[in-house]
Length: 380
Image (cartoon, rainbow, N blue to C red; front, side, top):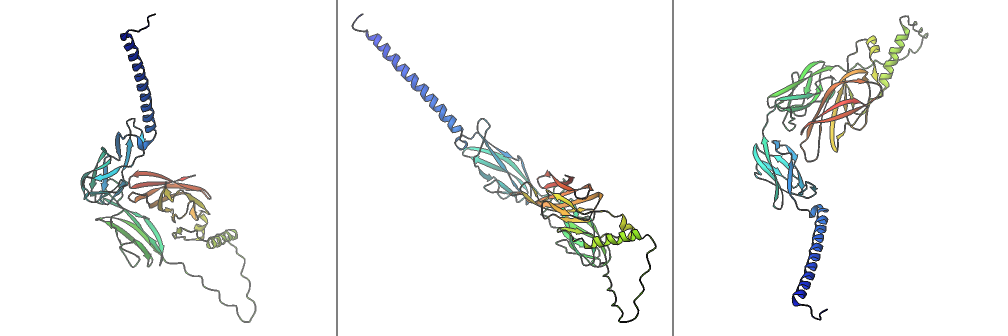
């Protein structure tokens, strides 16, 4: 074998070694870059933003409405990234937006809301409108008061599409203040004398009425005269001859009803009882339980329910109520729910439910729109 390798052979060997080394370095760098990209993509705040989507889109507001727009930040694979965006409004005289994306309608018109991270932006049109009151709902729709008793009425204005307009002013009036007077701003009614009146709630020229029947307070029992100082003892009363068993039951019902203390949060609206025999036909639940009425998710609610002639102001969950008529009874409820970062929403509901003593009834919530909820009572 020759002692000296030709120069062209040595050059080829050196070049081959260089190519191998470069190939190894490129492969290693490629693997390192891939690993770094995978590591970066595993941490959302390091991942490049590809798009920002806004919900809802478009945004529709009434003047005075408050609503949170949600920005969803996405990477190139449509994965959600937990990155904070910056908010801006093209025309801040129409709409205001805070750092959390909560928008408030100030004046009618159209503008654009933008959420951005660096050069990546998400946009949505914003429409602010001025709507007028089309109808007014009064709660309770009918009631009975005793003289000098109080009851607060509530009213909810609605637009032509059935959206509540809780911020609109409401003015109250009674058609006969001598029978029942009502505070024109609060809707608090007071019974004055026996009779029937209509209480009207009006907002922007639209109104609705509730009927109020005022009854005199029951007469106080006359105290028995003191016993005679002297003389023979009075003869005992003659024994009852006509249906003694029924009379005993009537007296027992009266004593039980009188001794039963009212439950907290329950107002029993007085009903006319014309005779002892009619009292015998009435049947009431000693106790029912109402659950799930104090909040919708994490949003606290303020709810009143009229079941038959009993007005229940929900204060606890669950809450007990008594003296509710057994059998199929109509109910009507009204209230509000307050969610963070949103306009206060109206809550309504009406229907018929079968009352059974000791049973629990659950408030079933349904969101009808951004500012409106419906509750139905369902046996549990």
